[in-house]
Length: 284
Image (spheres, helix red, strand yellow):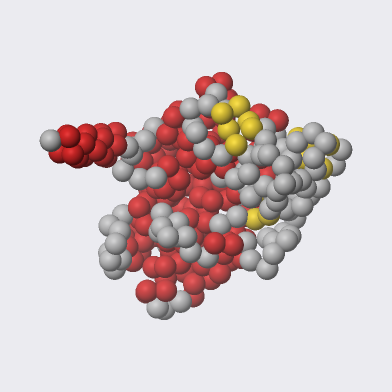
């Protein structure tokens, strides 16, 4: 009888977790929001072409959901981010400072496929990849430092219970913005003005990445600490030392409140810019 009772308790716990957990991992939510905003930004021809390609997919029925594909499982792992030196100033071109491949080369590669390829299967894959890359580059600490793995070597205290990278990948979104990607995309898009669209699409990709880098290095994110021309892991430690304990950043409600507007803005910018790229490549 005790074993039967134990089984019932375990099954009950699993059921509670299923019913109370989001249907998608946190980081997937942001990508779906970005790609849903982008889909709504498409011109008629662009939307028809995206819809046509997605209908050939054997896993996804919406463009928004398809943008989670490069993470599940992780594909082309070195292209989801761009690492910079600690004393890096700013990007002036679409080039990877520390590697042969990064989010810059990924975007260039998949944009070329969408514009020039006649192979629909290849174009479908590049469509899903491009949607993901634009989301990634607008997440501020995807533009980061290699030694701390983009905040993966920075622990946090507070309700998120994840490292700093995870806080920005999803916790701020789910804790402060919402958990339904359709509703969140709709609500965010309502606040985008024609002036926003014109401003956000008038700059080049390297400027979008500079925006993320500036946010990542700002004091309110507490990712790094300015020391002269460099941004150190912590005072007195220029980089993360694997032999030492990881630093802990306090991510409390004030932190989440302070940074939620930044995350909302980045989701909107990513969606509008992705829509613009797709109109350029598929909507003409």
